[in-house]
Image (cartoon, rainbow, N blue to C red):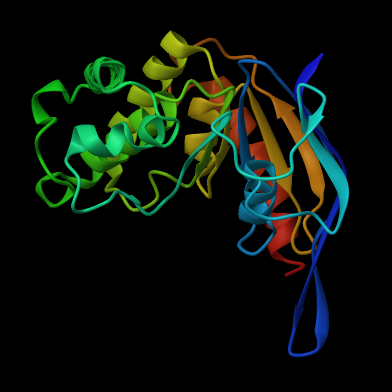
Length: 252
């Protein structure tokens, strides 16, 4: 049974008096602990769909449910990690991580204990008193991941979280994310433009069409982890995805 169900989701926007359809009849079930990557042409509605799942936007029609309960707004059950680091510059690393716990009025001692637990998980236990401007891009995203995890969400939603990183750091962060995911066993919904990133990370890849965004293909990745980025099995899946994307780009 799916943990998260997207049923008949449409999304329209209005700009300059004109209606624009961003998403068209999206239907998808995502299992508990599944790692799902969304990929598609720019402007196909990937981020819009993620924001709907996060409760940051409402669908024009259709429903999204978590454990059968309709999503009506943001919730700690769905942790969000953005491409921008979105850390509070005036708060230390530890204070950034425990911000959600503060809002829930968790006792201070428990905040610190949980914050340090997740700081250690992301390999930054010696940086708890540092400020965001003292961190590299990869370290900032580790903090953002820890901040999402500390609230014990059912799902982690990630919008191109490594898009601003250099190639070497991005590869390291992909491996680190898988390590954390294997420890925590959370459902992850991950938006990316990188075919290689999607194949390396995902259990399932959802390919979206050019606008209005539809689900064009769903590919299950049968390759065990850790995955070689250059194996023949990976190359076959890459060719299939690139073929799908190429056909969509030509229609843009």
